[in-house]
Structure formats: C-alpha cells, structure tokens
Length: 609
Picture 1 (cartoon, helix red, strand yellow):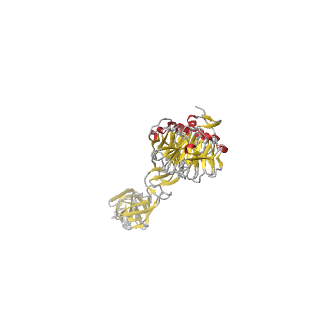
Picture 2 (picture 1 turned 180 degrees about the vertical axis):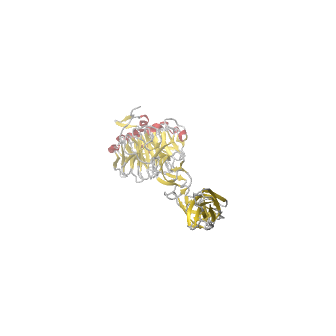
Picture 3 (picture 1 turned 90 degrees about the horizontal axis):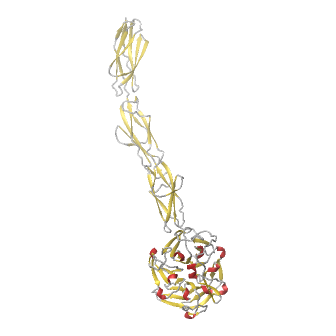
C-alpha cells in the first residue's frame, strides 16, 4: 500500500497525475449506482501484474503503468506507457509496437490524443510539454519547453505548463490540455498557440482527463473534486456528474458518437458511463473491488484504471494502470440467438415424428459471446445445456430454450415442440376370425375398419382380401363368397407411422348338412345302438351339433342331445331303451359350425319287441 503523492509549486498544491496513479493504492467503499447492462470486458494487450516493455501480440506484450489511451480513425490504439517513458501502438489485431521510444526523451507521459489525419499528441507530463508525433513517427514539441514548469499562455516554446496529464483533439485540430498542476484547461491551436480555455477561477482541482464532442464542448475529469465538468465553446462551465454520483478520483474521460461520456473512476476501480442527460451507471467493474478479471460488466475487475478512449464502434478502451494492461469494454445489448436442430414443431399438433428425437441447441452471439444455454421440457426445471438431449416418450413435448451472453443479455425464451407419435390401431367390426377354420358364418359379412391414433391422427387405412391388391379403405365392404377369406388391413398416421398389418378371416358356409339314420331293433329294456351320419360338403364340415329324435306316429316321444360330432363319418349312439314294445321312427337333427341346419326329414325304423 502507498500514499497520495503531491508536489507543491509556488505555494499551490499541484498533482502529478501519472505518478499518482502508479503509487496510489487506497481502498474505496462508495455506494454504486446500477450497472449498465450487456457489457463484456476483455484484455486487449498485456498480462495482468506483468511489468515490462516487450512488444508482441496481445498477452505477449507488456506495459509499465499505462495511464492514457487514444484511438485513431482506423482503429489503432495509442498508449501513454507512463513508467516506460514511451508511447505504444496497438493494431486492431492486437499487435503491440513501440511508436515513440525512450530516445525521444519523454518523461512519464500521461495522456495521448489523435487528430483526424493521424497525428498523435502526447501530454509529456514531467517534461511540462505537449508533443506532436506524425504518422511517420517524427516527434517535435508543439508547445512548452522541456523542464520549464509555469503558467504562461503564448506561442509554441514560449508557453508554459505544469504537469499536463491529458490531451484531446477537436475536429479542427485544436488540442485541449488538462494542465493538472495549474488546475486549468488550455487550448493549443494547430500552429502551437496556447491560450487558457478555463482558468483557476473555475475551481478545478488537479484535472486529470479531457475530451471533446463534435459540437466543440470539452469534458473534464475534475479529479480531486470527484466530478465531471462540461465546458461549452463559449467557456461556460457546468457539472455533468458531481460528488453525489460517488466518483472517487476520476482520471480519463472520453465520448462516443451518441454523446455518452465514459470515465475511468480510478479509486473506485470501475469504468462509468454518463448519458447526455446525466444518468450515471457503472459500465464495468465493481466499486471497491480491485482485480484483473475479464468477463461481464459486473463481473470484471480493474485496478486503478487511468485512461479511457472510444473507438468508432463505441467500444471503450481502458488503460488499466495498476494491472499494466490495456482492456476493452464492449457494450453488447443484443441477446444471443439460439436454434434447435432438428427444427422443432411450431405447435403441439404439427410436425409429428415417429421416433425418439435428439435435440441439439446452438447459440450464436456477435458481441460478447455466448455464456451458456438453458432449456426445459414440458414446463419442468430449467437445465443447463451441456450437449444434445433426447426426447423419446410418445406425445407432444414443449421444449423451451434460451441463451445468455457474456454481456449479461438474456435471449427471449423460445418454445418448440417434439411431437412423437406411435403407430395407429385398426379394429374390424364384426370381429374377424383368428383362423381359417373358426368363426364360421352362414351369410355374407360387411366389414367396417376403424382406426384410432392418439398422436398425429390417422392419415388413411388400407386392406386386401385373399392376398389381392392393396386397396384404400373408404368405407365398409362386403365379403359374400362361400369359403375362408383372409382380410389383411393396416393404417398410417400423419406422423408417418405404419401399423403392423393384421390378418383376420371371414369364413362363410351357406350350405346346410344332410343326415342319414339307419334302422334298428331292440328288446324292451335293452341297450340299443343307433347308427347315423352327418354329411357336409362345405368347408366348415368338420363338426356338427347333433340331436336324435324318436317319434311315435306324429308324437315326439324322446329327444336325445348327442353334442358335437364329426361329419362325414358313421356315428353310433347307445342308450338303454325305456320304450314300450312297438314300432317307432327316428331321425337325426344336425347344425353345422356356420349355423346351417339340416333340412332333410329322413326317418329310420326303430322296432321294440
């Protein structure tokens, strides 16, 4: 830990801003306003806590207490590498080179600025001069004299400054200087003429940052007054953000094309955003939380950020002084886009499939990058997506999904459907026989096929008779020809499921059987054997239900139920007669398996002695 370093000149308190940032490590606990949303922070160049002067790409480069940054029209970033006494250049690809080396004689440069034609201006703080560097790298003193500290307006070498710590250029090429030790803001024309824009009567205290807007207003980080001031072209000074905003030793300031002001709030270790209406928010970092973490705005950490600049895209570049790195803060207010593969159905009644579905969620984000994807099924718990998942249960399943990016943007949840349908079920009315030898009927049969499907709905039903052509079922059909007929049928649903074909039988026998009874004689009270046969030429002739009837004249004196008997063979039934002596007749009554009854009335003689 260290202490605030100030130097006293001519009875006034004067702040050496670059040195201040390098040695100052004071904890702050000021309450914070809300964070800006959709922000991500990354390290553009350098490695946290690694001190050096190495050129290289990204983390391979090293810095030593950088305090000021500026962007040119093509996206290059220039860095006042304060403790290395150099100015570095970072290309859009992250390639770091030394733009102005130690041989130029810089001493703790605090700020840099770029004009429209590519010249770079340097606040050479401890030399008390403003330097101009051409795009070719030629360095000259624009105003002031090396080592000559004072407050004098004038031309070029006749002017005097006191620890100038920051510079900014307007559209006309004028350079504005935060003349820190003199507590004033100076204006230097392209010709090197120096005047005072805001003098000591404005009450500035060690201004450490300066920026210009297109209308000619100048914004000042009034460092030890913990405020941001605005100076109009007419020289009117107002406070854009005062002490009530919670600023603590703000350093650099910059503006984007929309007029938002960004502040390196050094002792709070945050970067703030101030809208044109004066609304203050934390763009990145957390008040009092010193560190070096990249990530979302609220999750990022800085260590005494000293300077800020805006590029043409509105990204904010930060000189993270005590971390010895250059950071990039990108505002990302566009949520990531998530797609599902295969595409999910738009409703619970469309896009049916007939197999389990493996769903892959893919998120893209052109800004801060995707932080994570989440999903839920049928309103269940929200799960972190880690890879493809499978939906296999039949039915309609709502899949809701969304992604979050590293800027904290949350995509609008989307809901699609995985509709899985199993095969339909078809039934026949009346029920068909299970085999070609059962379920006989004695009339033509009209068959109705009925299909049901709990999922996507029935698309159609097909059938064939006796291995004939497959027909589209459009309504009941009739099978009338005698014999056994195989009816095969199945249905298809809208999900593409095809039912396993089923086969049943329509067995028709319309021909009745014929019977024959043989004469018999017996003594009263003795056992008699009655012999008979049932003839059936039809397919169902395998068995018939038989009754024997004994008649005396026209009166039936006895009926005997014999039961089911085979056809086309000679049969016999034995019973002990209880008939009185006399002459009787008897006959055979038969019903075949199809329900046909024998129609003949042939009688045989039965004599009882």
